[in-house]
Image 1 (cartoon, rainbow, N blue to C red):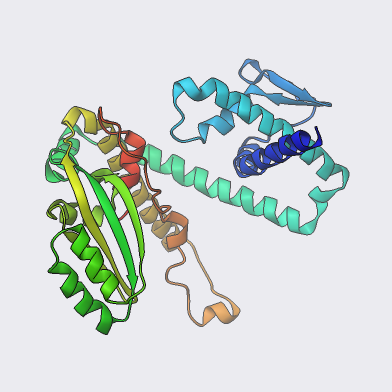
Image 2 (tube, rainbow, N blue to C red):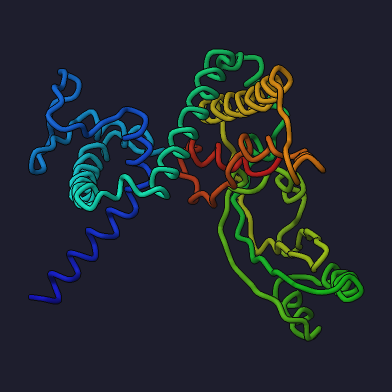
Length: 330
């Protein structure tokens, strides 16, 4: 019994920790969770923790930040979010009881989160107002100029070999590997070189690859490899097998629209930050006055690294996965 209770407690703890960043953002943005605060029709109570109500409005705020959530998942997700909010409120009550909300470090963290939310909200709203949906002509043009992603789209079985090696070792080894025929000979030559390497096999559709290599990989035959070099070695992407799985314009259209909109809004944000800096007076002080940080703006507007999307559904492209792949590299 104790084992089962400890497992349940650990599960709830993990759920709370996973939910905290999202809930903190939602709470700071809306000031939710106030005790005895009257709620409107859009924010009816979903639970009461001691004297504090948790509202449907709070749950919806968290759900709005869950990208890729499908309609049929909304009910179960709502219940999971509610349980997380309950766990959070219990922890918040204890924190307030111990006056942790007055701790200088906590106050600084809350202020930093507030500033981040305000800045992001302004930029998101400004970008949404300035950048509309792409035209039908722009969407069609993108489709036509990216055959490797759409009309000639392939799904690849790839064996990736990461080979850390100095340039004088890497270059002759790549020459030998390029002369091989087939997977077996490729692996034999690589092993015979004595160079340490790591291998990983994946099945990936074209839209799940970085844009920089999509066109190049489309020209690689089965049994051949694409090489990506770096100062400390190279990566060989050996195409074990591939199959043609084209996507029609109608299937790709939602993903292209989303991608173009996202890219244009990102560009708007970058330019808006530049304009704000030009209009403002920024003085660097102390040691920072010696060499101003030229890349200070980049971190605010840089996109997050793309995650590895799941295999595409056979019926067409998933817009979320498509957008991840398209925004991977420029």
